[in-house]
Image (cartoon, rainbow, N blue to C red):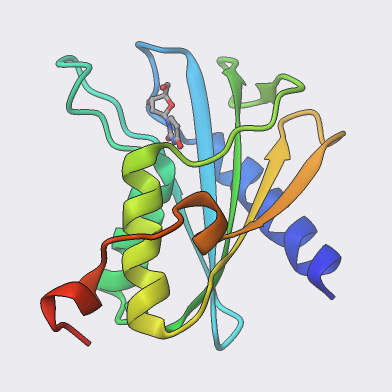
Length: 150
Ligand code: THU
């Protein structure tokens, strides 16, 4: 079951990455968030000319899930990143895991939903795959509960 969910999310993330706006780094990232009702919400990295103000795919996908009323019902997230070609295809064999800022944002959904979110990281070439829980990637997290937010 976990394997199937991971595969579906990674495929959706790879498909989403085709629309990444990443002309500065040339590195496309796609993220796919699984909601409790089976819906999938995707996002891509969204760069801009300032470089430093760029948004990561996981952040975009989770903010979109929130804007659709799903922040407390996130079950899992899949992430894929690699070199982005002009035709939208991704290449590369390395797994990427969410950056530090994205881990904090995943933790927000994890704690508010009362679930240790599953995180599936896939390589762009489809050869490699890893599974983590939110608490593994951000142990001893500071979160909403520390500020009395439920
Ligand atoms: N990036 C993501 O979208 N997610 C991550 O977890 C790591 C990095 C993006 C940011 C930037 O647009 C590009 O990848 C290269 O760092």
